[in-house]
Length: 305
Image (cartoon, rainbow, N blue to C red; front, top):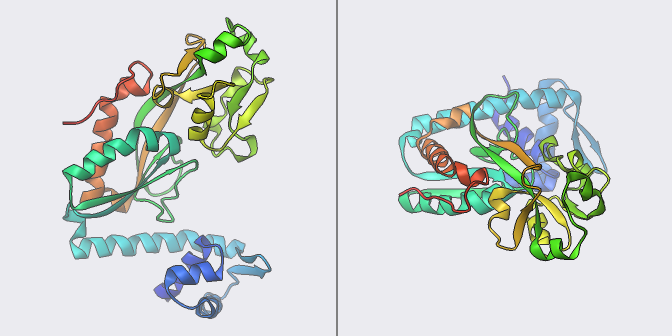
């Protein structure tokens, strides 16, 4: 039988930067982590990590074990919630992961309302320019621009949203006219860093102006939005983000309107925990109410009473 405590240490080491980081999170000495991992490998009968100057790197057997260990971890957490009665109480902590722009500019103000309505629930929000990893318990719920193709998750489509091409009025007045898509090649763009883009869903500029120069690039859509407001380049932005500013106006609005989707995702064992379920339902109601805002048909967000 595998020792659960050793499995827990194994998982933490796979998720941390190294022995010291893992030890700090586990609340034990790093030499203890090293000793326990060595003992665990002997118990399993296989080398789980390659050790080198850069730290610990999973072997092929290590990667195989991670999947089983995460299932065990999820089952242990679910049992603790069930036996403790916590899954029926509207109290405790919920961690929500979301894409950076949507999380910051749309979800955050609504979450503040949710917390006011549920004073015994605390919400940690992670608006990030990357995917949040539910299997590593980075969050209980995530809003993703891609539907998970594998894993033990509950998934529902949250909403479509639209992106358009934007510029300031000052930029349009002082640069070459834009009357057709072909004119865009003469203009500078703001966009993502190609080799750091975290989803193929974000590679939309090349469909319209593949040869145009990107004067400013960032992994952050919020940084792109802020740069676009300076009036020095064009940017493809979500309507829900660009509409926050009166400085930005859509360009070639009929020709350039890109539709993408948000997906609401939770681990199956967490979905029906009361506090998670309450936030899940609240998010769906808020987003449904703001469908026109997300599609660029309204500049005003709506609020649940």
